[in-house]
Amino acid sequence: MYSYSPKNGSEIAIDPNNVRINAAGTNMTVATYPAKEIDRGNTRPVYEPYRELTLGPGNRAKLEEIFKLEQKKLKKTKKSLKEAARKEKKNKQVAMA
Image (cartoon, rainbow, N blue to C red; front, side, top):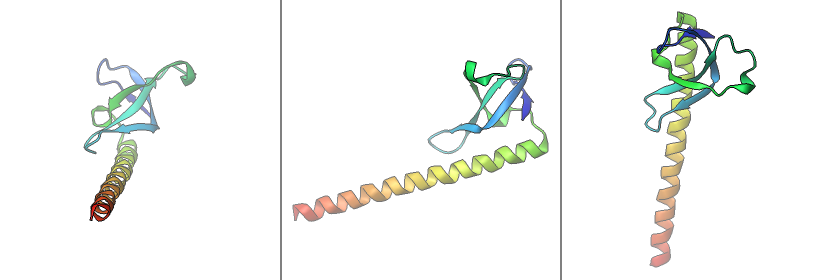
């Protein structure tokens, strides 16, 4: 996928497989590279908020889908951590009795 940088307007390549979601699950950043850079192993990605990128409707839909999947993963992780903490607290109370 390609887009234009919101900072300087240059063309950038987007890697939809390399994303980060914030702890609250409200925003996602996507790894971007200069479009002219062919060998991505030599450059570090710049993470841009996906909502600020100028994308076509098809690409926007793909990123929205990725964002929803990442939100579900984060929610599931938080739920399992909360469940584990609850079980640990329950076991601690039983051991004290």
